[in-house]
Length: 119
Length: 456
Image (cartoon, rainbow over all chains, first blue to last red; front, side):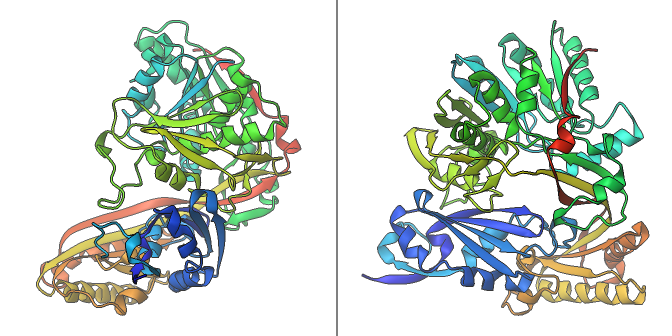
């Protein structure tokens, strides 16, 4: 089976939300068959690496197989959150796309839609 | 038991003002108990409302109340659709009076409005007592002046208010989900230990509370997640049976999309542990939730599980957050990035010359600034095109308004004293509110919660 390395954005979608200085990012596989493929690659350690430059101190992953989804809770990733952040996006609303863009995964080529710009 | 239809007309303070109109048109055609909710009260919104009430005892309800209520009040009254909303903010009684005034203007007779009171802890406790409550998250309140301290009420008081047979229920701080769960408890008579039913009602509320966020808004990603006619996105309607069966759909003849994907994103929105989402009514567990697309724009949700609520209630305490000063300027065309970087370094140097101590952030928008950190670490390591369009943004927080203004002014001065061809300066200096979440035991607030009908 031929595989290729793509940003998570090619095979999953998600949304971020804030609570204090903590952000949660959901990651949802477009194709239910991709859920298991992602489970081994979308790890707490990789997510922490992507948010470390912002001061992230820990990541907890929750797995929801019924929804083909993962929920990541990232501590201290909001530079103080709305209370203290100087970031234009103090809520971290844009951060789901940081994760979708930077986390690279290896997936079967056939799992991408034929029209995918990632092919 | 009739089926309950609950539509959402606003998901935040400032949401689209006419979104409720198609929701009401749709609810008017449905057979059953029908409700319209407006969720307009974020943590900071209430503190801002409290500041308004201190300045004027008749103010302090949502400044957008007229915008949301006036377009739909006549039709909801004619069709016996009942409104439940936190438009009351820091002053539900004045909000109720305002709704009566609007009704009078529109020639609506016999409108009945009730309010839920008791969320405002400063009405019962001194600031010093509030300071002693244990902090869960956010800033340490310390000895800072407390603007507002409001406890998140659950759904029971809303159900009690509906039992007064009123057309409109206005609350201040309650959980967003309570706006939906209250009507369900009222109509379906769910008991305090019907945990799984309360869980289905709470997830319905969680899905409705952000308006279009479950119907394709905050979702569209062209080419990956396409959503039809987002300019007229239909706001959500939940249909809930007495046994907890739940369908999420949207207003008829509107844009947007309700699918497993849109619902899944919203299920997990602002949720941390999906097995333990805490509310005053029930601890919600979504781990075994299943979704099914039963028809276009109709998703059935089953399997939410409930457990008893936590022993404490959450209180949002708001204190003065000082001032945020910001300024922005754009550089475009050949060598724009170099000119933007020069501008950024000038602002940093000016801040030193002026002796400003507070941490300063200078972004270059167009380089991934919102994903970066205060030191622009990612930008520095990126290969970026020198040509293009870049916008420099400086930001500082200070308890001194003049210091915040100074940094904003430094950006403006770049018009004539900065790199070549800077344009489009915008300045913002805004008063901030900081919040902390603290915990209180329910016995300490229960006695002060009450509902009452309000007339003009």
